[in-house]
Image (cartoon, rainbow, N blue to C red; front, top):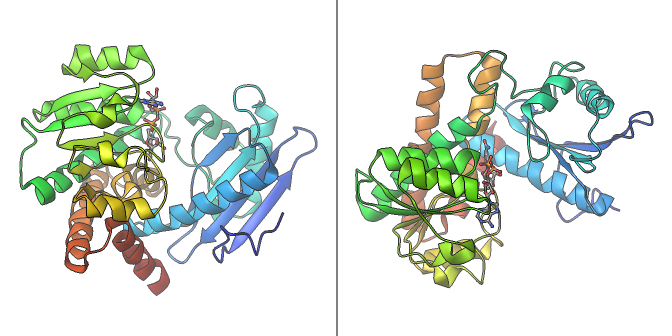
Length: 346
Ligand code: NAD
């Protein structure tokens, strides 16, 4: 297994491997860039088939966090942690405490938070051993879960995309297909419903779609029929890689704007969307509300300031859409350039 010559190695500042014999913890923390501030990124727990797979994931995801924080205009760098193991069967209190020791050993260059396979409760345990665990707010309504803010930022971004592509100020009567009505997708759908949008939704869990029918008057479609809907906007809020060779020609929407991470299966799919005149709101720009929330949890600034910051996602997207149209480039490429201008300048 190579590190410095790994295809996903991108001049990362620090890659640390940790093994705790007592708890069995095996974890990697990757710090991509700290030019703008300490590296913040979630701690994922996943049963990787190989160490190589875990390294690839942590290198790729930590780089993504540098770009996300830079575009979101917060003073954070990019990092990520992965714990190698099954979060359902192998997560123990001792393992999480050992993870806290690992995070603490980096002296604040990396701040952790919840991610796939870890929860607010896990961050509390990790936080018993380190000052650098985010996403925990005692006594708050959501206990530090950033999903409501992610949903709000995605809603603001979706409105900016609708204005740019469809020329509308209001979502009343706009048809939106939401794939995945979980923590973020349901809350996004609620904002859209409150604005008078018409919703069609899908989810693999019927209790989630039933709630959307009951509370939001949504129509439900099964499985991947969500890609074929005659809608104005497609909002992916479930899985990654859903914009791919099999789905792109099926989309009838002229906007793709949703919260899911890594929506494009490959970078070239951004160019294919552009060729089909489908406006794509780059995923890491539109779903940055969560990281902004975790940042404000640490700075302790007011909820009003947080809301105003998250509303800036709309302006950032409009700038990206404008530059992309002027230069006839995919929006994802333009977003990357803006991020690089910011963190390289710093
Ligand atoms: P979640 O698990 O609460 O919701 C995802 C939903 O998608 C679930 O209801 C799940 O049943 C459903 N789903 C899974 N496979 C599906 C499929 N094939 N078709 C339709 N539905 C399917 O997760 P979440 O926190 O709401 O996150 C949603 C997406 O947003 C993820 O890609 C996540 O990485 C991204 N994201 C979340 C946050 C956050 O703050 N939670 C921040 C940034 C990005």
